Length: 293
Image (cartoon, rainbow, N blue to C red):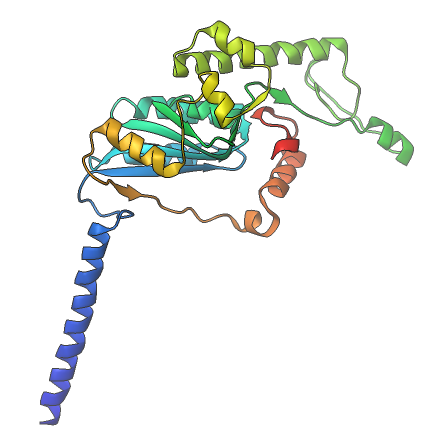
């Protein structure tokens, strides 16, 4: 009798947990945030903060490109931009994604410079009326500590293989040749930015050049200049991309949250960026100046 009672109890507990599992599966299937492979889905990819590396985002883009159940992707951009190379890599991967999926960029508070560069690769761009965007341009920043070293009685030495190897060194003033060299590079990278926007947005190059002087726009102003298609929030972007992809009814949405690194959690994004710049030196950036971030 005692063992029968135990067996009945175990059976009841097992049935309870089985019911919980089945219920969880049903909820997951019906949930808009379901990651289970049922039905047609819209995936959301977050692009946040300073763009310093492209690997995680391009991997995520390729992952959704290979999933048959994902019919469309929303790029949720909250970024003032960042390094040129990573922004260009993400841009190229978005263009490749568009061969098989529909893509809409959804701008949050800021989607400027490199953030806008990436958005320009999408089929459509949705922004809030007050989103800070634009800032089409290139910048390189560095410091000169020669006078400070002199006051402290310190002196720096550089051994180099060519006269331009220490361009932008903090240990000496820049020569006119240095300035011309850097300006030529900046101008070339800027032309690449203008070309990408003109191609992505279907605008004439001259139209982009007129506003590609680093100026920022509100989302409402960006619509007037052809940089944004429609005003709206993230949900509007989801609805739009679902229509473009031919998804009927309310789409199921995949929106995985990425954990932040310990250093970013403790110090914040801007602090970790500053540390990186001190360690790695000046970088050519598609980046909105600090005063707007």
